Image (tube, rainbow, N blue to C red; front, side):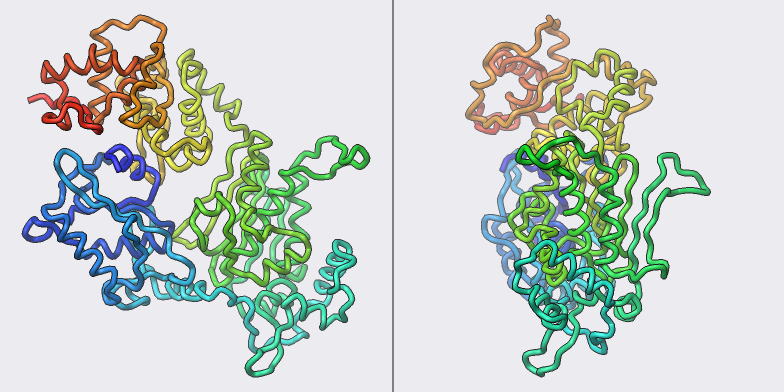
Length: 605
């Protein structure tokens, strides 16, 4: 791994840097490492670097490890010690050495722990040693949160019999409506021939304890088809809410439609789904199109995506949580909120192919109605549907502080006209000269209030390192500015500054092309025609190189992309003279042909 690749990981992952110097300076695994290891494993995975530290301005400073071998040995010994940590998640390939400026650091990729492995805890106690990643820090989880993670480790806990609940606690009308819908969708299915109790047994609503021989109602069956009063006895914080917000909300009327568990209907999951799905679909247009040249199509992939999002919200919720199910429809978006964090990583969800429902009985009950995907394809299907409409990519947020998952589907163009118009007004011709990736970054920052590395990667599909370089360049040029927590809250459009005008900063931009992935041994691909057509005085080009290299170590290929010149031109005309003038320093001065050779602006004496 190169220093630049590490910088890309620092932006896109949960990231923690620790000096790990030890008392004698030789290096050791610090106690705080185990807290970060637990937090990342329990949340969404991430990267820990031993032998570096993050400065107040966000830069990463290498300090190196005096004895990397000793530190790595201590690391593996600790991972195998149950008094240190409950489980070792690391493989040999997850631990890598990075050498920069003659200093060696260890980079550890910590994966999200599997469902059965959580909570990952330290000091031999899940009650007092379970951590979560909240914003950019590690937070000790309270006993209740840790207990909920323990409950999630049981893959079929919604299949258990609920004590004290019988057939009388099922809502007769819900059972009738469910069976009617099942039969209409699957008239030839063998379940349809069963009597009511046989039907419920086949569905997994009525289950038998194979050991004790008793029969009862499963937790998932009660949630889906039960009486609200019986559900509330089991889950005191039971809450189901749908809200359609007004286009111009006022203090008196914040919404135009609402479904809430207000006692006017039996609030179980099936009834909630039936009441809400039509309202969600009413916000989507149905184009005139014929299926098989005979029948009009009544829904689009967007309809299927919204339905999938609603079912996923209900299937993956942790109903022991306090926040409840919340579905919010605004004039330009849909938002789905459920208690409980994802049981798989965010990247796995969007990649597809892995299904890990928190409530498998609920998943089967919806699947019997041909609702919801069971092969882990729901995430990709939602993204594809939104991409087909040219809308902004779905946004998935995990709120580890409140243990909630938010899915936001915006019915907005990737480049909303209002934001584009506002930026063109502020930036003039500078906006049209931007590269596509830069335009998406600035428009998103305007439309959503900020743009983070992960959000820009999510929207564009670009490689994380390319996104890192473009954000750094936009910050360097003064068009974006970091928030107080740039890794989590991102970057905002810059306003004010020396010229007190975004327009001045924007119009001064000579936008370079996006940075491609270029290996150090493949510099020749850059030696094509110059990417800038106008003549720039040599003195200005030299200053541009110095400005770009002031942000850290830069390779020739990165400088070439940033200033829009061929690699050979940059090397011979700009970098070499600046090195000779002692205005640039060299990362590997004794090995000019080092494959990771890089340059940095020399600080004034």
